Length: 466
Ligand SMILES: [Zn+2]
Image 1 (tube, rainbow, N blue to C red):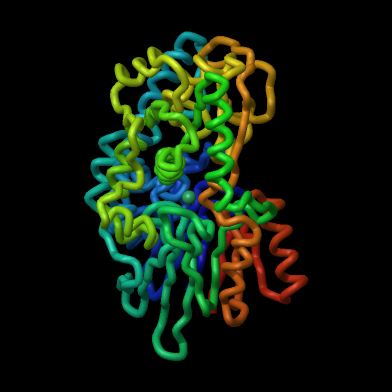
Image 2: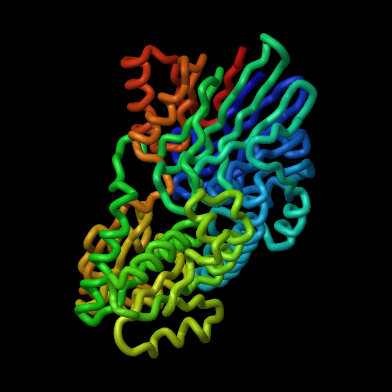
């Protein structure tokens, strides 16, 4: 078997691995590059001829794992795209949204470049269009957790719950027969233990080869058990001061987790009965998908749904879809809580809410997720005294808070906990999906302390797995 690293190699986004066995070529994930220095790879011809790929397995619906699928199809891929039923329901929402943004971006760039009389590094066309997404969606096939899916003669894949977001999975590939059989495990994105909504991550007792993500290989999070009391404290203080709480949020998992905690806090009367807005059509759509996939939720949340107690609903919660409804939030008198996208404040309705609140000393901007370099979210979080939003400069006078226990990724302890389940060392461990220095340091530590064979693959590096 051969394994080739086509992305998330010594950087975080663009997850994509190819393996070959018995004449079949299979891709695991086909993710979009989102880090600035690597964006140009989205435009490169695919490093493996798309028409020679037999099948794609998708670990989860985040764009850095699925966002190049329509481009792969546009370049000639026509095989099955295999994933879990919940991911299959999330992919249309995520990919259609991505195509719309690509189309809007291309139109905007075309206009701007024409005005400035210059050309960008690429033609001003979308990376892919809604039409490409329409050709991609019919290729999706589902397989439930725990059931082996045959890929080719002597080759199968089994999806296991990764506990990261709804429908997320780790993929166990089995190649060969009898004593010659080998297993290769792809971790996907490993979730945190003890989170609400999703189950704990699966662990493996044995694997010959392992590809593991290392996003937070150098860090520890707040305990997920503490997030509710931190949230309670921030909301109660802001409401007492008469301000609003503005929360930039990701549409999948984070928004639903916030509603879950706010609903419990509301029932415990932690804060007065203020209005709570989820101002994101995408997050509202994703919330509907959760209710369709109780099989992917943890026991506690599933029990709530089964007994008719809707864990995301509570008095005062308003789900906002239209622009008119969104604008009407400005007319609310008194304090309110506003959750809106995008999660790093790079676009979407959150910008309007920031404009209305960022200069109000009684309001709070609360961050509940990773803020990448060079984003508006990062500038606010780093304490800039003023920020530019939609072409104007605004002084930052609101209180700025963050709660990192909401992360959907295992921290350093979580990654070790996952590896420690293996009863004996794998023949080789590949570390991916992390900033270069973090992956290299973790590899060195595992070689030194455990004597394991560990590699941190370079982009396009290939390995023969014997
Ligand atoms: Zn992810």
